[in-house]
Image (cartoon, rainbow, N blue to C red; front, side, top):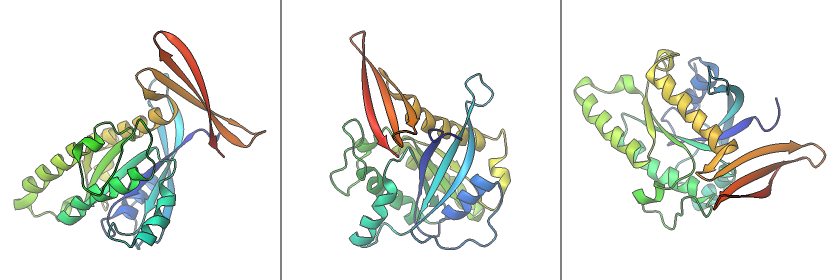
Length: 249
């Protein structure tokens, strides 16, 4: 498949929330038998059909980057981890529904990742304090996924799910709550599967087609120069202008 047909999605969250199990379920459609701690970063690939069932349908590679570590890590560890945040097209924020702290830490994870790739039209992060307005104009699609749904006591389920709904709203993102040991939560045609497909479609659109209401971009790989070139078409005052950007290998 051509180099342009891929997107990069970060999978972020505290250690032990089930990121590796989630990524395995998303990419292999199987339950991960013996999950282990992720050291550094682990990458798996999911095949996604963009706008499935329409004339625009096209297959893309979606790279899921499972980043290990803790938001409380030393600055040297965060600096090393920052290399994984380059050229990100989407972010999946994962938390343990039975661990409130893991939910709260998603704010710090998102700020850490978004601060690594600040652009003029994106999110400007100037401190470690969460500000909802920082996500209002975020151009990177976000999805919030809660794991271990099966472990929530029935008496607390409504309370927990209400709290996580507000969490997703803070990020201006859809949410999915599931049990990573049960593939039926992502069964074809289910509401979760629809949300997931919608998220990946949005990631692909932001990467290859849309930047804002008056801008369309397309990327092409030039083997002779061994680099990706992005051609952006802007509509300003009914006049078209073009911009060429070298994206790298």
